Image (cartoon, rainbow, N blue to C red; front, side):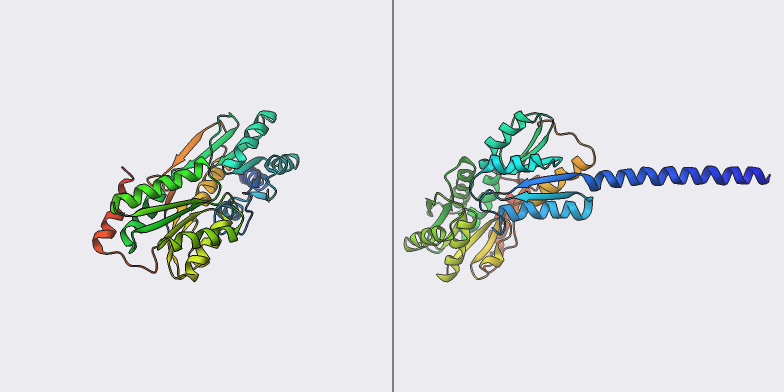
Length: 318
C-alpha cells in the first residue's frame, strides 16, 4: 500500500513538471515574439498616427510579453529603415501608411518567409496582412459636427500630401458637412507635407481669413500647427487619428479616431496566439470600431443634433 502511495506521488509530481514545462514554453514563445515598427516620416511625437501605433505595441508588450523596436523614416528612406529592421531579425515587420506600401511590397517579395503588417494601405502579397480604415466614415462624423455648429457657414479641410488616403478624409468631411448644412462652404488646401507645423499654421490663417470657423487638419505634425493656430485665433478645430484635445484645449472640439492602436494590438495578439499571415486585407469602419469620435468638448449639441450624430454612429454611413 505504501509503495502505491509513493508511485502515485511520483506520477503526480511528473505530471506537474510536464504542465509547468508546457506553460514555460508557451510563455517563452510569447516573450520572444518580436516586432519591428516603421512609423511615418513625421516620427514619434506627432500626437497622432505614429504615437497611436506605438501605444498599440506598448500594450502588446505589457499584456502579451512581446518585444519591439521602431524606426523613424524622417528622410523618407522607408526601404532602408525597413531593411534595418529585417536585418535585426524581428519576427514581424510593420509599416505605417501609404508611403510605406511600395517598400513593404518590394521587401515582402524579397523575403517571402518574413511576415509583414501594412497599416492604412493595401497589399496583395501572401506574407502581408494589410489593414485599412474607412476614414471617410469617421471624417463624415467630423463633417456633421462642423456643418451643424458653424456660424459662418464656412469650414476648412487641411491635408498634408495630396494622396488618395488623405483625399478619402476630405471626401467624408465634405459629405458630412453637406448632409446637415447644404449652405456651408468647404475650403480645401493641401500643404504638401506632413512634417512642417509652420505650413499648417500658415494654411490655417489663410482659411481663417476666408471665414472658416471650424478647421479639420489631416496632416500629421503639420496639422499640429493648424490646431494651435486655431486656438490662437479663437476658432474651433478637430483632431485626427487620436484624441488631440490636449494639443489645443480651447480649440479642439473632438477628434476623428482611427483606432490604429486597437487594430495593431488585436492583430499582434492573433499572431502571438498562432495565426499565420496569409495576405488578408481587413477594412475597419464605424461598425467594426475601426473609426469613431473622441469625446465632444467645448461646444454643446442640441438634442436634435445629438440624435442625428447618434444615428450615424449606430448604423454607419448610408
